Amino acid sequence: LTSGDLAGVKLLVSAGGTREPIDPVRFIGNRSSGRQGVALAAAAAARGADVVLLAANIEDAILSEVSDCANVRIDRTGTATEMDAAANREADDADVIVMAAAVSDYRVAGVRDTKMRKEDTGTQVTLTLTENPDILAGLVHRRRPGQLVVGFAAETAENQQALLALGRQKLARKGADLLAVNAVGWSEGFETTENTLYVLAVGGELVATASGSKREAADGLLDAIVAARQARS
Ligand code: C5P
Figure (cartoon, rainbow, N blue to C red):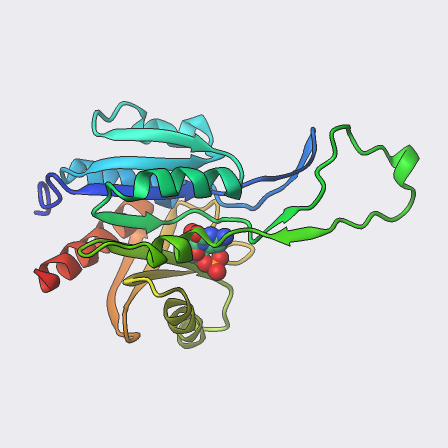
């Protein structure tokens, strides 16, 4: 059994999906429920880790899996900018960082103070989007010795081979130590309760395939994280 193998390990995990305001009542968001990241926080806490969960727009019913956990601290964030600030505030203390949140790549430039009204905008509206900071890349950049940084990739791909090829490119681009790749689509990945995570290591080797419930997938990823930490020491 795996219980206790993360005792004393400080884990920072992001989960959910960021929302970028357009005006006081509208936002651009995504379909990430936060289930996989919350399952990671719960599984890691059960294995003894001290967890900080950066929760972006996660329903209370989903967050409740960890809200009574003594060793999980929940830090709610809304936008990518807020999550970036929180992640950088918490990163130095962490032994392991897992960025499971779906972070918006862009935010709306010139967010309006008042609600956009159709009476004023007419038949077409143009929104200008500005690039958000890549939180994961920033954390990799400031990674301290011994710290393990794990990214996620949610991709739509034709088949497993194509999915892993996209994952390998992303891992190299981001510079993370491990990348958990999962297939997403109209009916896969987001909002579901089952998942398959393909875990890639530096160099692109597939080191684990973790599937089942999101909790089981989380434990499989944590096994790979424990193994990567052991391989280093
Ligand atoms: O490039 P892409 O968004 O697919 O990368 C996914 C990974 O990068 C995830 O780990 C996600 O949490 C992280 N990410 C981030 N900041 C962004 C975009 C993605 O931390 N602005």
